Image (cartoon, rainbow, N blue to C red; front, side, top):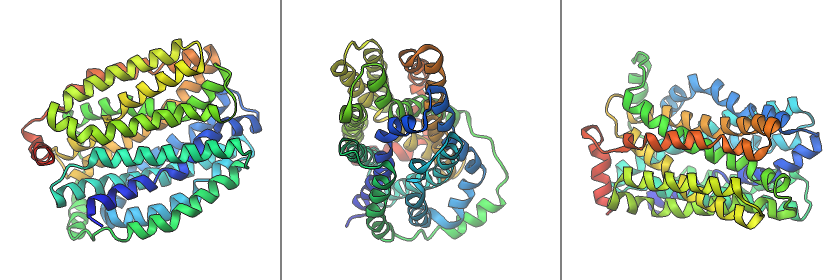
Length: 391
């Protein structure tokens, strides 16, 4: 199998089990008797796990290489991903999500480092399509989770079974990744390198990405609850909001590499940013479930290419190794993904979920303002060359 397809397969497999958890959040909330604020506190577990991992994961990945990170990361992540469904209190739910956050962040970093390495090896732009396959994976997982809800299967065992089925396929694919011959040198240099603050360019790219992934995380955790509590949807319909959202994210990402080569990163990011804002307004003003689903679709397309564009932009900066820039960006993106849901929950407890979701208008507007940081520059010549080759 060609390297680029192998990496895309691994991106597809990674979020399936996690996606099957998302439609079960309302069930866990009901079973534990949690209000929006209580659920928000519990959901903080994943950001806490990210923060605990942040000081160490970059050097860890540099030490063992992206390939080994993906192999071991899959084994650990799929072993713990079902733990939140076994929680019997807000404390154990928080702790389980923190453990999942540690495993998820490390694995995600390894995936992005390997995707960037595959682009350099093959000379082909694949980052957006890799994340398109990630979106297909989480959409497939959310559909599996919605099906489990419809069949009234226990959340604990349905998620665990999905993880168990994915594990051997993921490991078989991961071990076929080529060894990174440069890893030992990178480790030696990285061990001696002093701490260096991110450049203004990298900070700007992170600011752009934060609002995008914050919206992704909020829709992932609250779309089902929103449809159930605000629009009174029932059964498997509550899981459709995220499934449709993820479908449009995937569609946008599959076309993202071609659109970038034709129109440029900044233009695409601005069009998509406007679509996300419009979609969010539709969801907030929706009088019924069908209208809200249209809004979720628009948000999905709107946030689709943001993170892949940001990864390529960060990796092409020359002030530090590409892996280090991607590590910083990946952690900021994951923090946005995981901090958004608790903020929505706190606001929803005070003013209702419509107002809670309206909080996302601010970070989306900030992301739109920072799209200019994706513009090609002398420092980003490598990304431009790859984009030309892809065209």
